[in-house]
Length: 428
Image 1 (spheres, one colour):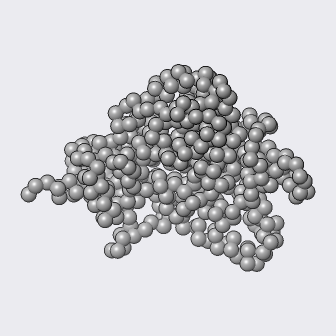
Image 2 (cartoon, rainbow, N blue to C red; image 1 turned 135 degrees about the vertical axis):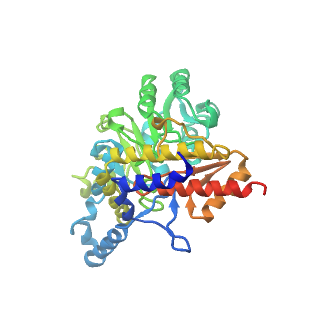
Image 3 (cartoon, rainbow, N blue to C red; image 1 turned 90 degrees about the vertical axis):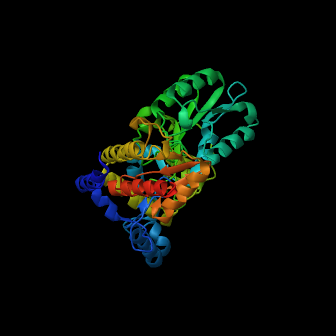
């Protein structure tokens, strides 16, 4: 494609985009000149839906007008508020409504779920994760191993990358699970690796882990509302995710959890709390815990209403847009970004993320060929020009076109700004 045709291509694709109207339902920050940012940081914090302000104001009005009666009265009684996000959350997760719940934060949910699903024995003490896992995941796993009296130096197995750029092949994952199978209690992998942007084959990993007698759990922080998920059909044992990234539910948003229905009636060790007790008997205030059947049985406390209101708004947008349509746009938009980087900026950038659409979501992880200092220089240049990605040590710039609100013209701004940085560095 000739460079003088790129702008017209981007404008044409934006004009034909059936999801284009969703951008207007978000608040896009602007620079000092009033120009909207080209925002590619939905993998860290999604933009605010316009309807969030009214949703929170509605609950504040209920509090002011109904006080404690707001738990039982009004159009969205607080007693049931977590149920008002359940069905749409299940739709995005590819789960049954009974298999999901909004609660706590991501790492807290991983801990609570590992209390139930990580049951190490002398013969099976080990947990398999990827090398370079998100630090919070590694901290959680290491602490769980120590808490149970085992040694992370032998019982925390970290799978090293075997592909260029730091990604992991499907064959390497399968080989590691087979190699350590007799010792594995849990395989805990991400849906999308936060630094490389690699989308893992959750269905295959689940089958492989369960095939050697291990539990299959997933951190879906970068996969939820980004990549297609069918957690129920894939047979995943448990999963947890946050909603502040692609889920657009605000900083520190309430997280989500999944427990497959086959575990619904099973006896589990668990940390129990009042809100996880059986709804039919909860208010009898009995001394003995009887869990609610399904994922809601892992709740501890009553839900934070003001924090759930943005999630309710955002998930309704995903239902309206449809995950299939969003994925179709995401594949095309990120694919075009990758094509243009390789054809126009190949002398500047290396793409870390796998080339195959089936092995990535919206995110492209990029390395500047001239090293970390040049990478920081480019990142700062982009930020100063309203092109917002994020930086992950030691040397990765993450650019994530979120299909709900990003456009081809946003991608073009990134390409043009990067080309201008390259040209500015060339000797006169």
